[in-house]
Amino acid sequence: MKCNNVKRILGIVLALCFLVGLSSVTRAATGPIVSTKWLSKNLHKKGLVILDVRTFEKYEKSHIPGAVKAFGPWQTMNEKFVGFMMPPVYRLVEMLRSYGVSNDSFVVVYDHGMTSQDTAKSARVIWTLHFLGHTKCAILDGGFNAWDQAELPETKKPTIPVRGDFSASIVASKVITLDDVKKRLGSHKTIFVDARDPMEHFGHEKKAHIPRYGHLPGSLLMPADALTIGGQNFSPAFLRKADELSQLARGVGIPTNKNVEIVVYSNHGLQAALVYFVLNDVLGYKNVRLFDGSILEAAKAKDVPMNMYSWGWTECKK
Image (cartoon, rainbow, N blue to C red; front, side, top):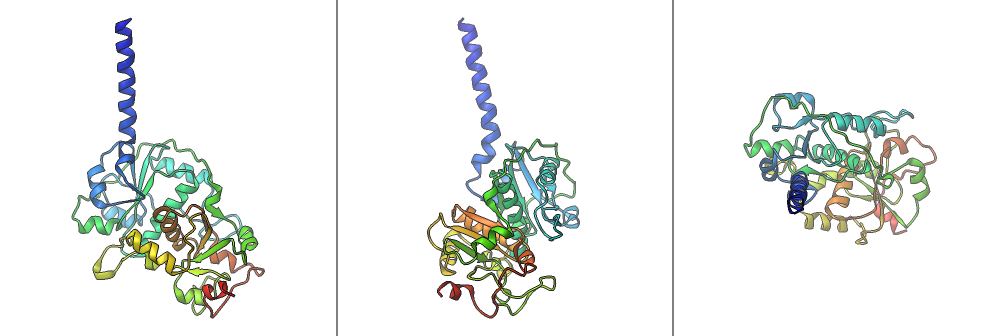
């Protein structure tokens, strides 16, 4: 009996050690942003999956050891022929499995790290993972640019991942459709946040493929470009510090109530993903939703009003 008890206890101890090993990389990461120092120390941790979302050309030239070539497609044409939308769930699941992602994986995403637009590519992946129910993920602060400037190891050898067994558990509240947006326009219960450039919000400029000028009525302007310090004194696109981002959010008029419903949008959901990441992951807002079709879809709908030559925050006061 004593021998059997010892064996049983030993088995439990070994099982616990195994589980601790799987979760160690997750526990070692203290938040949704990891540094190059942290990643360099954890490159070989069990359960870590590193996704390189730069172009294939950049990946093949040089990448972080162990990183998987994961350029996409993270956005594609949907059945209504609206471009830059989230692909069907089954395609995303298959793609993530091919990248080696399982439900217990800790996923670190990195981009080129030169501009806020680069960081938005990583944020779009994070938002997609959140929608699929996977929250064990983080952005590499400063992206590959920060890694390169720190003179950390790089390689040209492609990573062939072991296929993962990821399965989705959809969190529908992470996304909002055009019909839902129409119902919320004019409501004081929903805060709309425009992540585009100020002149696009104002209605003075627009992308050639966007049908109309302007912004959704009452939208607050929080330009994605202001959320990193990319390009300042040749710095990589590091995210601004949390207290500075909090001050920025207050400055643009976002309420301090962390439970308020916030809908973020941009031209086609890329810059919006960076604002989503800052509000949801860094500042702790609990009800942030991304309008996947964004202005590209809304501007095509004749029954959606768009205001020009004004700022949304002034309309909120009317």
